[in-house]
Length: 102
Image (cartoon, rainbow, N blue to C red; front, side, top):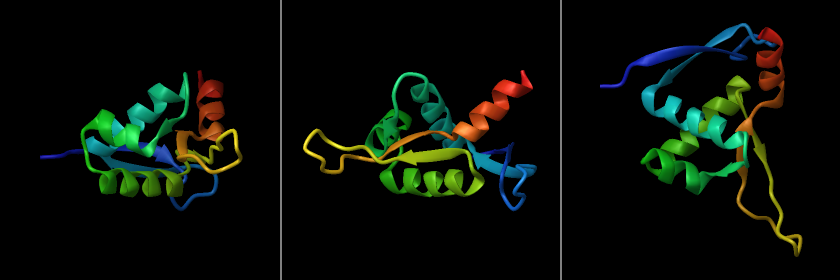
C-alpha cells in the first residue's frame, strides 16, 4: 500500500504555493534525482533501474514533477552533436528557493 506525502510545488499557483501529493515510488524517484543532481544529471534508464520500477512509472513521475516545477529536463548531446538521453535534475528555481529558506 502506498501512502502520499505533500510537497510545496507550483501546481496551479505561479508563486509556488501549491501542494503536490506524491506516492512512495514518486518520492523515491524524486530522491534519486536529488541525490544525482549534486554529482551529475541522471537519465531515465538510470532512474528506473535505481528505483526498481518500470519505465512507464518514471515517465508518469517525470511529467508530474515537471508540471509541479520540481524537475527540469536537460537535453544532452554527444560529441558529434547528436542527441543523447535526456537527463533530469532538480529545478534550479526550486533549489535556489530551498537555499534561501535555510
